[in-house]
Length: 310
Image (cartoon, rainbow, N blue to C red; front, side, top):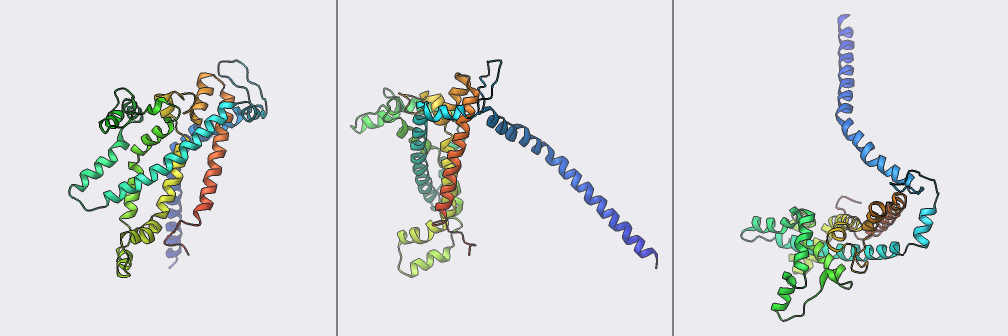
């Protein structure tokens, strides 16, 4: 009779030891990821914040604390700052809107039951798999005013050609066209949402005498609203960080018409060696993106429908 409590205590102790070992192994397995986050993400973020209050210039031996001087210079004197901010806002809004519309249209096409459906879906998604550098070089050839394919198509139909990325007036619309070309990722997310739409709701619209437009307006769009919201947020954040096109295709030109904000940060940091100044620019971009995101989250409360929400 007295052996039973002792057996229970031993069993409890064994379970506690096993639980402790499990926790230790859990921490050990997650340690590389935690260290990577601290060293390669949070560390550089904190370093850039500190550097933004200094005159650090990489090649200069000294480093001086100058307070908010970099920020004052940016807002008072830097004309490129205003230019790049306007260009980036213009591109972000235009490319996000165009990409969302194109991705939704492609998703609707991919959701149709047609012969060779798998092949069509692969073809639509294929541009996403092309490396960014290769895609930009390919589009430089397409945009070439003399022998590019786009002007060749226009001439075939008797239309005048365009200077595309080689003209200040058309460079941003041209880059928006390039961003639409890579909308396969967003289209795939829309497709997943389309396949989750309850069929009974679509049938209910039919019974009420509704047509295809009514199904799209009153069932498809409300059901897809969380996905539209997600793609909108991710698209805007990605557009604010646009860099490759300016670096590879336009070099910020012509006449600074494609001087994206991140390209300006790169130029100040690695061309002009003004690392402290570039850090201040980066933190301003962070605040701008954060404000945009908060505004969209607040706006989204009015039109995003969550099925499980009260």
